[in-house]
Length: 453
Image (cartoon, rainbow, N blue to C red; front, side, top):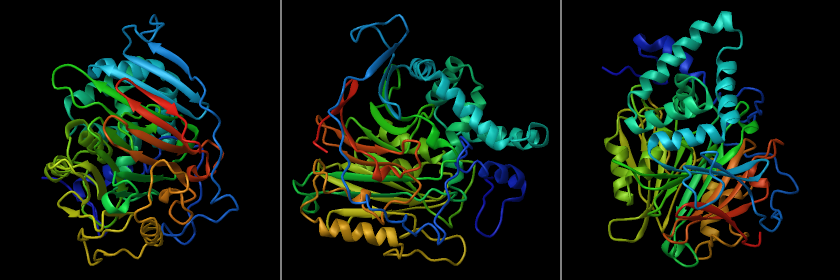
């Protein structure tokens, strides 16, 4: 029988294990912890004079490219990994082939970053090795338990990445789960997201927005990464891209070649368990295994879920029309929030999911960021345009937080998939206030394009 944790108490048999796992709290790296707003997760970041400015981006330059295997020197070679360094704080990694080949390419091309990720988790969870050895061992046991609920090809990919980067596979798996497990207690993950289509946008096309607001305990010092995966072989899933960090094989904002998008928001007050699929791997499963909104929603509904979360699923529905759903779920239940007037949006308040205890859902949410995002989407009704730098709801002051690590807009139209992305650059300035770059997803590469931002 699964053991659960709620606001009121912990399952007795997993008390110590879950308590230690939840201390991961996004703790991949522990060298910097930005302060959260004093008034809580609904408090916007302090205003600055530059909040509404649209930063200039230089003309895209040819990135530095490296291939794996190392003997490959040209694009038409038999590579399984291609690393394009866009700038010091952003890279694009394309991996293709079997799970083992993709994991190995990731580990070889980003070896130092994968090692730093693992070391940071270990340092955070075991700051004094002698004193904290038992706690760290319990965390590793918890990661092994959660790994049992992952598909075999994912476990193979993590193992291959670990071997290539010369790190322990269990420790790398623990690093993959730090953000997912943290959701059980909602440690400093206060994201926002929306999908708009039909009459809500200028041309009727789907626009997806996402803020990854997270006090990353040093993750800001990692390498922000656009990861493009092209699976091949028996049981291969769909090609997809995710936005995350070097060494992370799942990610937090994802889109596949069918134009299906997924992103996750922390929710609070539900029933949680380590006996389920970690949320970010569930997000990845959606873009790997589904092509329609209905299929993506169904995957969430039938999954062995772990932590209280909201999952945005947006793309084409079974009729070939743009559509979106926000699925609120915990270990025991999943409910669906449908779009209204061509829009669905979310922050961190349950709109329909019942609480474990006496705290009811809030629909519409009273969250200030939710209200601000809703007002901006209504103001842009019929005018929202992916390519217009003046229409970017997730970059609006009051929607993102001071802990904003990436801010993205997605244009998922098949054949012309585009991403507008800003990332935190190690200077503790929120991503939404950083320069935005634009990219187009091609069948075997992600290329930077100029939208004149």
